[in-house]
Image (cartoon, rainbow, N blue to C red; front, side, top):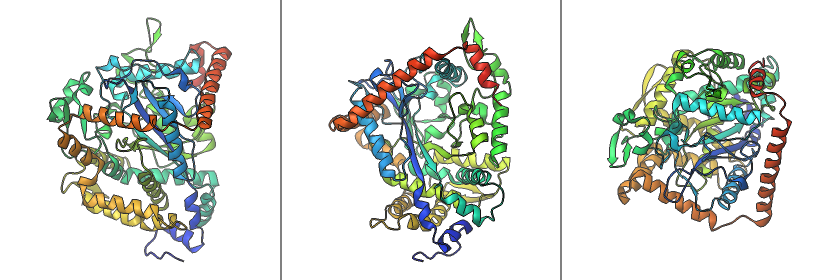
Length: 528
């Protein structure tokens, strides 16, 4: 064997001993990216989702997230990350061909927001499923405010190589069905990610500062920050304010005890939250003066409302609840949700980072992952918040297995344990991209000034720029980058065709509805 390491995880040692390590290279990677449309003055767009991009309801790759102005781009999954990022690049080229004077905000934290009402809620047409998506977002407004929902991020979707599962199943002794083993494997991956995922914020966090305008609807939160300049607030050692308590979080969900020890436990605990009334939301009302304000008055309206750094996913059929899709067909992939937009890259994520994340997720899969007690989940969340707010602070101490440990020491332990996986992923490659990616992250652990969050603050300081100006100027550079290299005409036509097809699909869905919206919701929530 080319690679020799001591004290490897049992799963990884088994793959090496049986010459199965090549299977690690076959995992599927997809990326989802949210971007806020802004006008040339840097203010959030008030125009509808451009019709030339297709239907936000039915287009497979170009849709909207919370707001009509918050675009979401989705790639198909590919085994080669270059193909994944190449597809994301093409989506940007196509979208920019139809944005006119508007541009995509390069940062995760929104600028150009003038209070909650400046954030238009996404519309999805007159069908029942389209109305449900809109009403769900109205519920989010009443519960958390619209401004928080305008925050953008990157989701990294990863599907463990399908051929790997039977081998790991055999190594474990063929106990139980393969589908149950796969579900257990994914939940083990998730638990390990929750233990070590704070590292994602340190390495890739890119939201250390925030425009004061973000707080117009929640001015009391401004007291938690220092002033960078007259228009910008920040924490000096912050990495990802997006992942802090003022970011894409919900304090109302802090008491939820979601079970990550098994698929059944996860589905049951998440389902309980969806079916448990919450007094504060009952005060909002469900239907007021004939108009829906939210889907229900429960702790969660639907599964997507639960804010988590990673979700187990299965493709749901039309009208099927996500938890039922998981229950019926198991876990298909995981969605890692803790990445900020990298504003130094036009598509928000670079190849080196993506390769490192893939290796990181594989390490989470292959290492032992004991069950998680509720108190451990609380510790994991505290570690994450510490790193989000103070990750570059010299001597920062986290909690690991009930013991204090320095962030830098723990980070190096994690990275050292990834070395054999990166070496195996690099077999057959001359340029060793996974090992190079690992070296780049090791350098950022040793030197926090190399992190994206530190780089952002350094650029703002050097240029004497407020955060909003820095974000707008960078966004304009990205727009020039994409508009100066238009799509190949054949690829442009393919995207035009997809847009037209999606509009026809939306029209067909609207024409085929037979139930009232009330009956549609009753049927949807009665699924079991």
